[in-house]
Image (cartoon, rainbow, N blue to C red; front, side, top):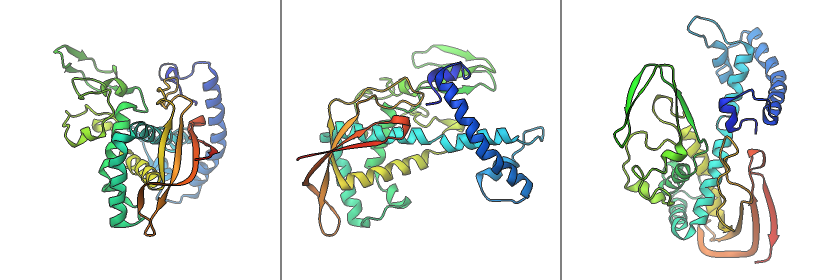
Length: 310
């Protein structure tokens, strides 16, 4: 909640979100500063990210101050938290909202995986989940968590648009691109406003046309981990429950810096009946039905449950 779209252009604007952000950072500073200073004074060399920041040097040979190390630690701590949480939410919502087309692929894949590996889930097993990978990728295409990516031009260069217009980007200028816009371009994606995870089986798009994780030299380093994390969550949920969307698919909430769904955001789920070997049965469900409100209060997807009769 400490960063809103305005923060990109006016990071110190006197608004409530920034005041809360700055107050929270001061509290974190009190905690981390002691840890950072103790590490410096101990002289120990630990194989962790804190040591990496302490040992880092600028081009002129100067070290990072404790406050700079703190900033880096906060970035590492929170950089992928909200984006992965919200992408997990969109992955499920879109698949559930299009369950007649999407869910059969996902359920059949989990049945196949469980028949081969049982309940085991590790890196290699997750790598076999292509259908789920496509579902996550399509959710990121339609609802990328960041509406704007910024890059600074280190040298001047020329660009040409798809309709033939030419521009020169001067050195030092900031370039902005919007994944939310770029991913809906008809010149790049066929039927861009249609949810279709199967498109990735055949579509061969140009480099950097898909920028859910950025692209090029400064693409997101956490891309592989993010896919692994989200696929782990939804492989477990698909195996255990059948889902149904309550109401319409929520609209994106562009008031936040990380774009999640607006409230209300409600689904209904039933626990699956399973065979003795743990494999999913087709839609034979237990009698108890529950409703689940997927809300992103404080960006942590807190769950509110309500028990209903079947």
